[in-house]
Length: 119
Image (cartoon, rainbow, N blue to C red; front, side):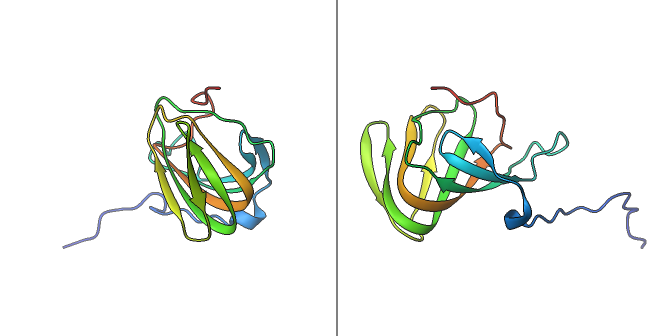
């Protein structure tokens, strides 16, 4: 039995601390695996800013994982406390924002689409 021919690697590697940050509604984000040929999921490291903006997505589900800091999330008007290793799953349509001195990992599913942010 022979192995199937692989024309390109079936994996990707990213070093989040080497990706240049860009502004986002939450603060500054470093986005990995954002590519036209990847519709599945992306991963972002986000430094939350004091002026994060409430927003929602029509298609994306997001999973937040708090790495550092403490604060809270506003989720459809409710306040949820955050501390390291708190995780939050945010479904499409849920208006949300993080507040506090926080560094999080955000995993959008499907892959991040900048046109799917509504204020």
